[in-house]
Image (cartoon, rainbow, N blue to C red; front, side):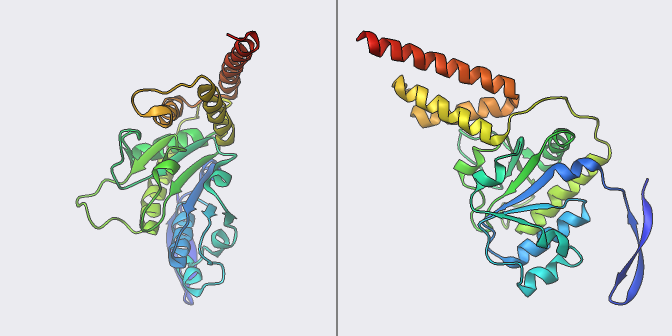
Length: 268
């Protein structure tokens, strides 16, 4: 049940309607990749706190902590701004995450899955956040996420719009997704009990597959090795592998490599 609470702004007290924050929202990270405007970082912090989200991760951002515009637009959400984690790469931001959703407003090539809408993405985010760490990733204000970055995500999501142009401002897009996530969290059933592999573990698996396929001189006619590996990411991204599954696939790759070693040793 919601309740009213008092909020003091500009010397005046206001009564607002507030809803208890579901615990699963603490497992959701909002990741901004190379944000270029301090004001967008501050406004993102405000949008997050309004919807019960507190974990902000910034990949190679512009200076923002002491920029007046960022602090002014954060408006009563300075603790989210000050607590933001700053990292150098997206890989670092996602290393200990289990489920990653990348956002885009542009149509991508065939390698990428068709994006789901923000509401469907929110449902899946909240389902996984019941027991696992989830990241919702937003790209640069000018170019969004690169295709290579989206390939690191399990799911792509977008906000349907009535017109092709203009696209939403970065912090506005965060607000739309944050609102959908908050609504979904209020009625979310318990998530599945799975021991999901973290993103870093999946990246090690993809690297193992690459090494094995290169030794096999595997060269598919359509898309080449890179296209095949991208397709492999799509397949595994849909299924959300558990740690035991990842270990099994490592065993498979290692078995192929041992067979190749025996062939090389026999001179065949």
